[in-house]
Structures are given as C-alpha cells and as structure tokens.
Image 1 (cartoon, one colour):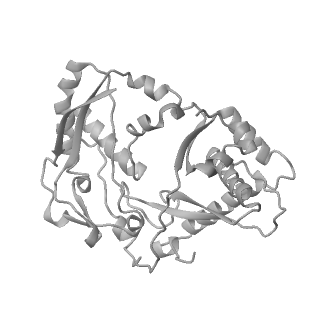
Image 2 (cartoon, one colour):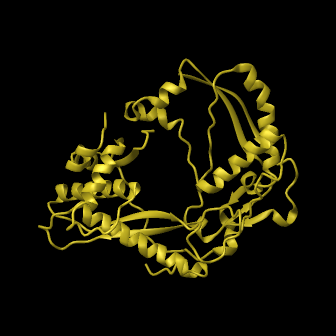
Image 3 (tube, helix red, strand yellow):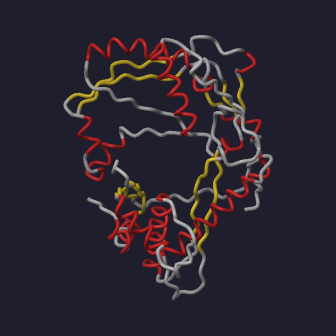
Length: 348
C-alpha cells in the first residue's frame, strides 16, 4: 500500500473570532481528559475529476463553519486550562492511496491486520459535538454557505461545570514493560440474544429486567477478566469497572440548546468477594452494572447543579466488535473463558 500526501494546510475561520470570545475556559469534565485531539478521516472513491472539483468547496465550507465552531480552530493552553481561540486553524490533509482497495481493507477480518487498520481509525472526542460540527459542515457544503439549517453551537460547559482543584499528591505511575496484545472479538446478534436469554430467562436469575446489548457484552468481558485474574492467582479478587454515561437528556439542570463540549459522567461498578469458593455468574455481574448505572442516573435526575452530579464522595451487522487491549498472559486466559469461546468469533 502506498500513501501519497498531496497537501497539508491550516484552514482558518473565514471571519475573525471576536475578541470577547477568544478565551474559552475548559470545564471540570475537560480537566479529567484535556489532551484528547479531535481527528476525522473521510474516504472517497478515486473519481479524480469529481474530487478536484469538490476540494475547493470542502475547504471553503470548512472555513465558513469554523466561524461558528471557533474553538476547534484554536489551541489548548495547558497552563491556563483554557482554549486560545486564536483562529490558528484546523489542519486539513489530503492524501491518495494507491495499490489497494480501501473497501477490501475495511471488510476483511479485523484481527488479520490490526496494525494496518490502526492507521485508518482516528481518535474521537465527544461524539455529539463532533457529529454536530460535521453535519454543519456537510450542510454548508451542500447549500453553498451557512443557512438557517445549520445549528448555532453554544460553548457553555465551563459555566455548567466550573473548574476544580484536581491537584493530588500521587506517587509516579509505575513503568509497565509487559507486552500488550490487541484482539477483536466479534459477537453476532444471535450470540447476544442467546446471552440475554441466559441472563434474564430463568426465574431464579435475580435479574428483573432485560439487559441492553452493551450491558450484555460488557458483562461478558468483565466476567472473563475476573476469571482471568482468578486463574492466575487461584482465587477471586476485588475488581472495578469504569464506564461513561452522557449527561445529555439525563440531568434536571438546564442545558442550553445546541450546547457543545464534553458532557458526560464516569460511574464505577465494583465487584468484591471474600469467599474464595464463590462461583461467579453472569447474573451477578450484570446486576452490578445495572445497579451502578441506576444510581448514576438517579444522581443525574435529581441534580440541579454540577455539584450534585459530581459529589467527590467516591461492522458486524447487528453484532458488536469488542476490541480488547490486554497483557499477553491476561489475553491467553481471557480468550479461554467458556462464555467467550461460546459466544464470540475471533481469529489470530
């Protein structure tokens, strides 16, 4: 595969950002993960003349839409915990790939060439904000300019979730020299439905609801990881699982229409046991997940401000692809879990 970089340029907003908008403080939520870079890749078939004709329109419409999404053209200032909305621009690269059909790459088994796929998968931050900006760009491109159909974003997160002092006296993180293995496990719709029935079908299961597809797959993975630790150490160990839940549509505190930015809350499910002979069941894990999520949603529903939300007290159709990054020894045990073997397909 040969990748030819055709052009690299910074696209600036077509109109300079007003001075009163040139400094945007990040929110408390951004403090938790401020170093995320937003990247998107768009793929087009090689119809040379059509692409050449549209490149200029893509650049022009991007420049126009950046007048609304002006923080995207700025630069993060770590020391000030703010974005300098200086109109420096969004980097736009145009590349051409020869000698390979990208359609074939994306349709092949993901485990067959993970290193190659990694070049085509960008890091994405808040999904709603990014999709809103891309849809706005597409609308501006189609209509030849910004119209009433383009949403006007509002960057109010720093007011809704003010910054906090997160300075902690923590020891330096230990250096990890273990080899990390990446593997993709494909769970098709039939396997997910089978697992749902296994979890909630029996009258003695203790599960009084129908788990979602995400809960089912998360349960499967977490149980296998707990089992991996037991296989290596001879007994069950306490374990925690961190998940992320969007705050949009879940908090009673007013959120401005078209509010953009990271609006999420982390919540933790905890598994603990002191009985070394206890047999771990899928129903136990899914109940832990649902209880933690129910509490998080309750906290959001009753929240009237950010302090109530964060109290500081603690490609396969209808299937799912689970990408696991584990130490080599953990991966060996994980992929031998009976439920993983029975309900997923995976190739080296």
